[in-house]
Image (cartoon, rainbow, N blue to C red; front, top):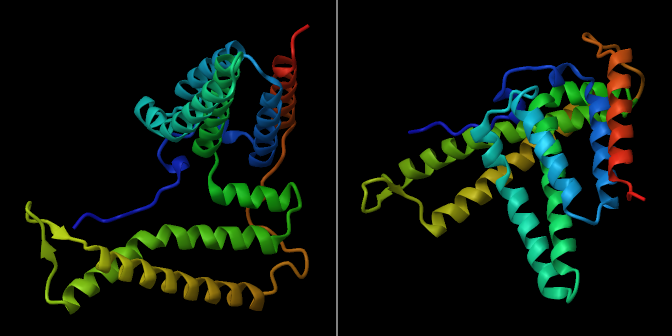
Length: 248
C-alpha cells in the first residue's frame, strides 16, 4: 500500500536566496504586490510581470518547472473563469478587462507560489510572533493545526485498514485493486473528522494548560530582521506600486 503524505511546498525545493529573506517582511511584500495589482486594468503589464516572476521562480527561487506548471492549474482555471464571465457580461471592453483580471490572478498566483516554496510554516509562525508581535496563542495554535493536518493522510490509511479488516477484506474492482464505495467513503470521512476534532480538543487543552499567550515567552532560535531584508522589501514594494499605478 502506498503511504499517503502531505508535504509543504517549501520541502519540495532546494533552499535559495529567497529562502533567507525574513518571512514577515516577505509576507508584507506579497500583500503589497497583491494590493497593487488592483490598479491594473489592461493585460500587457500583468503579462510582463507574470513572465518576470516565472523567470525568478525558475532561477532564484529554484522551483522545478514541472511543479511550477502543476501549481498554476488552479490559478489558470480561476483566471479563465474571470475572463469568460467578463467576455459574456460586458459588451465593449469585456475581452480587455477579462484578460487584465486573468493576468492579475496569474501574477498573484506566481507570487504566492514563490512565497510558499521559500517559507517554511514553522519559520513563518515564529517570525510573526517574534517580529510582528502576533500573540503566541495564535501562532502556536496555527502550528498545531498544521501538524494535525500533516497527520491526516496517515490517519486515513489507518482507519481504512481497520475498516477493511472488520469487513473481512476489501471489495476489488475490475483491475484487482481495493474498491472504495460511497458508503465506505462516508464512514471513513466521518471517522477521520471525529478523530481530528478530538485531537484538536486535546491540543487546545494542552496549549491552555501551558499558559500560551498569558505572558511573554523566551525563544530558542530567534529570527532576526536584517537591514537587507527591509531594503529588499521596500524596493520590491516601491517597484510594484510604481509599476501597477495607471500610467499617465
